Image (tube, rainbow, N blue to C red; front, side, top):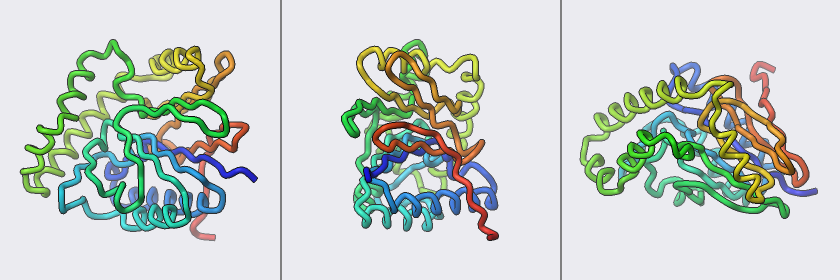
Length: 246
């Protein structure tokens, strides 16, 4: 039996109240444990966290259950690929050193089972969004990030959290079901020869056939715990359901 490729995106840990955060973490941890049975890869397509600013010797507290589950995946031989989103862009080496994750700052062109995949978080792909493209270059500047890291973690993470909330509000206002501009980007990529184009970012769950390819948007866990799975033949978006009271 072929090993499966799993995809998640836009969980936005750190956004909700404590009870909701714990529920999301338990759901994701249970899904990661299930993946160990038949996964070859886990693709995190950005915004696993609603904000992430990793200092040289400090990371934000919490989520140790999540980190343990990711470590278990690594030890089970599952390859983790993390495409950095517009909310969780400030990574150093924690995920790569602890979980063997391949960290991707932009997009990824790859093949699984002889099918061509174009995978990205999705931010910055709309070339008409000049304002955001300028902001992205500013925020991803390594020198500016180094300067920001001089701020005490308690203050730096608080500022990052507020900035993230503003960014999410901008995104939610910009996109709607009738205005997912990433559809046009996906169609162009399929015309270039890709079989599957996978994005997150817009929070609009999509499964669109186009010519000989397919556009997938993984939606957001702010709605429901969606995940994608490719078994070598077909790609499906599923909702993870588990009753912890059983």
